[in-house]
Length: 252
Image: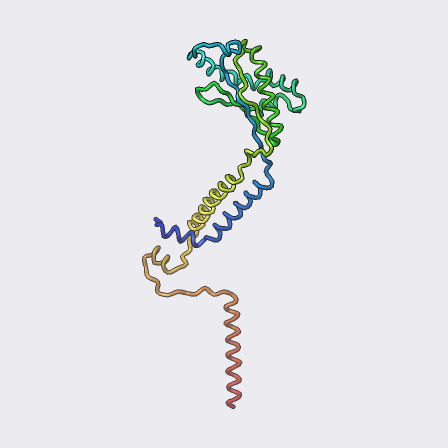
């Protein structure tokens, strides 16, 4: 059976309270969990640039395109070197106050770069912004000092450190986005349940449905009686009998 727009709207109106209840419960639950139970996560980052060797800084030379391309290709190598025990063990040894292991650092520090640029970004996320800033700054400083020993080059410069913030803004959870996603997803699920229940319901409850499915007009309808209807009917019958007997006695 094909349904048109009116049929869909009819199904939605028929089960509108179920849909509203599912959406309201899911959205409110997500909001409560996001605002009161999920731990906020803060992000700190630093930027490193791969450029000329430090002994060439300040020297008036023309930009060598081949050197720039080489530096860009070296970034992929540097991104892997940063997240190795050689660097992280040094960070743990030089900064014991961080109280973090090399394995945890490898899993915590994220390194990214913009295509066709010589800039690398180091990112650390942590429930404490101060701790995230300390970790990412420590990794950046150690990497800058260790890369000349590893690659025999001295072309890493620190563009900016992670600065202290009075009121840092958490990057996770995105409370408003969570609530919006919960609303949309729960609405889709509620509509799906409503249409599924309608599809599984094979009862004919109205004259229009009988005529639509059978193609025949309705000649008569039998009203469905509830138990309380029988009780009310019996009570009325008894009252009418008693009233009739009273009339008879009065006539006599």
